[in-house]
Amino acid sequence: MLINGSPEILNQASNTGSLRELMARRVKWPVTVCLTTSILFACLSASAQSSEAPLPVFDASKSYDLGSLVELGMATNPATRAAFFRARAASSKIGEAKAAYLPVVNAAFEGGLDRWYTPATAAPDIFHRRQATTILSLEYLLLDFGRRAADVARAVAFCEAAGLVYERKIQVVVFSIQSRYFAHESALWQERAAQAMRDFALTAFETIRLESNTGLAARPEFLQAQKNLLDAEYKVDKARALARNTLGELCVASGLPADTPLKLSGTELPPDSAVLRESASRLVEAALASRPDLAARAAEVRAGNEAVRRAEADFLPEVRLEGNYAYSAFQYDSQTGKAKKSNADGVNGYGAFLTVSWDLFDGFERVERLKNRRDEEKAAREDLAAAQLEATRDVWIAYQDSFSAAGRVEFAEGFVVSATENFAAAESAYQAGLIPVAELADAAGQLAVARFARAEAVADYSIVLANLALAMGSVR
View: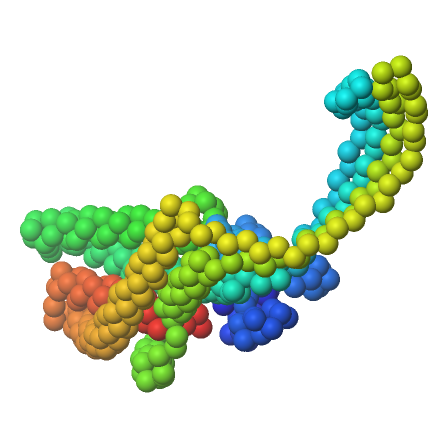
């Protein structure tokens, strides 16, 4: 739903957990025909907005976590702001449609002078006239057989659709920030693992180099250690590049330029992801919430129904009440033949009329318009059906991916445990002189690979959970 106010209120709602409550706020049209129609408005009053918290702005000295980045993205991402203003523009259409229920009042003034004649039997009546006339007219549509009601209901449906699209855009932006954040976290964890592997490869290379100089290590061992060091350096550089790229993507998702010097709060890889997997189970078992994009499609179908009803009403007459009042002050000189006379006065005039207008034939324009509206309504229904099918696909795939990703995390954690135990055993054997340093370096490499895999699996699982929430239409 369209949030009452602007992105500022969204920020407050995100902090207090009352986002759903704010989204449920609606106001109603006071005319009888619209009493059952709930609509969404932005900005109820200027006084309410004056008490809102200011929009967050980027602070280069601040370290951001995921929550503060989402809040920043809501305020700075152009996609959410554009959707908000489109929704607010749609709410203005409701007032425009309501205006037809009120009378049209017009004021006019006419003043000037002229010289002309009136034909007469004896001679033309020539006159010089100076006149000033003020006119006040009123027109009120008494009966239109549902035209206005259909226009208002259609505007309400479009407003609801725009508000729901705004909510869905918020969810998409939140998901974008979450997925980029998790990807950047994974890149940072991989960079740390690569650095640890590089440090160990460097130590092993120096050890074998010294042993090679003293004849305790063969040339192939030295070359292998050198290769391992170069490979470790390559992986460190690759991990740094990935971290820089994911940081740029995170900045853009948050509504900031890619080169923004964004600082993130330090995060550590969780020692155990069991709690994370339990939260996914609770999420999957929860009832499927109504996705805003599907609700928006349903609102478009309702708008199509009202458009058909409006086109049908165009075949019926309109009954209007018209009235006017005018005051004319004038002065003129009249001459008929040789007779001349001057006159000056003021006249009050008024009129009241009941008019009935009925277009009996318009070249089949109304017939074709009705066909068009009916086809558009049918197309909207098919779009809704297609969107529902896509939603079931999204939820099903995200649901299955959550189990697959959970399994990969569990396997990766087991891989880390096994690689850690293997490295500890290799380290003890090396210290006891039972194995060469090359085998110890190989065990360290396997541990780094395991940490790489675990970091990637945890990040992928976090992204899958965010994708599942998006597929279910949840912003929390």
